[in-house]
Length: 352
Image: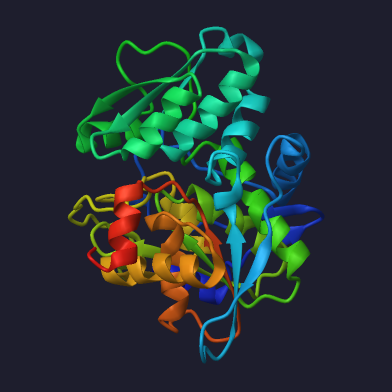
């Protein structure tokens, strides 16, 4: 029996008081010595909401109208955060709860650009140093933003960069490492998006969230399913880097081939081991999109709603338009809008 079979029988999420208890089904063969099991409660997310209030934007939820689509699509516009991405929420919460003595030498993170900006923004507010390890395909738009916020970055090959995320360290680096995905405080900060969605649209059937490492979707799903377990949570992935869909189908993490693309804010060749127990319990399914489908969605967002989304951000709408996530009330999380101008021009002209 795999985790999804167990959930169908007796391991459904439970609400105890104001704490969301997640029963995690784990195959002992998948465990590794010292592996960290992540536990996030609804109260953790509500505490994060209070902690980051006034420091991040409460972003709008707007209706998206598309021809004869037989349902209602809504857009949660995280691209309207000051850094153009949801990552500011998790970064703000994680640094806020950190022991102040650990911040003396600054902070660092591993990021393709958006988490980097979130950490850099908060570090600048606190007047502490910030360093970022970025993969070699990080877009110039995001690198320029990192520099503009006063942080410094080191560019390394993607596989080496991924190992920083896996091992949580980079040789010779000083300061507190803020994990971009599996830090519980980061996940709780991300989960505040889920609270806002339900505040603005109490009756929602499906929420679609771009899948990078799992921190965003885990936070949102924890908040939403604690309040309304009937809501379905779908991930959106790009075909060039989509490990979640085959992992859910297999009932265990699997590796896939990673190919860099203009969708630079999500995707990898595999799942983080510590995130699998959480995402396998909370995510109903994953919808894998082609680059063309995502490009078309980005173009539609600009043409119909005047919303600028990056590749990851546009993937949630692309997933909704396939019809695979249902045809009732669907919320698409537009996770970010940091896209290079030249890439956007190619998308709008239909050459990408």
